Image (cartoon, rainbow, N blue to C red):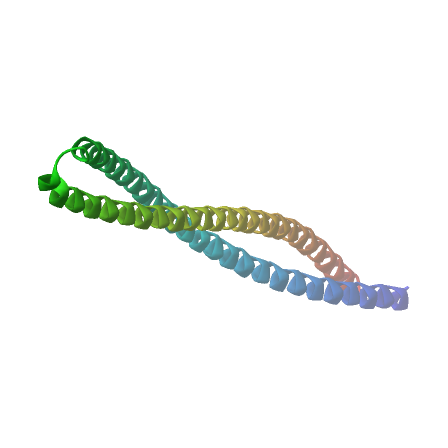
Length: 184
């Protein structure tokens, strides 16, 4: 009977050792997951900050587009006015030819300015589209990082539960071993 108790005691000590090893492994896994959660949270915060900067750049580009469109409208209005003046003076005598040439030159300048403004608008619209795409990409990245962080937290909570259960089993077995030792 004493030999059997010794065998049971040996087996119980082996089980306790195995469980202590499992607890140690689970503790290490839990620490690694917590570090991973911190890294994911940091990456998510950084992505949110970049997203905010991108949103501000996008809004600034939209404002420039509005301003340039207003400028084009104004330039087109001036050009229309000059064209009307050209039409009204074209039937008059040679004394007005100098004024006509001057108005033609102004019209040419305005056309050039309109072309430049249109090119700027096209560039800003392209930049706006790029910023919108970048913003969407960052928002997707933020969502993904949030999901990864939440999954890591869930896994960490499960590991904590398993660790608690393992520690309870170890305590029970240590109590059994202690009882068997007293019996011996």
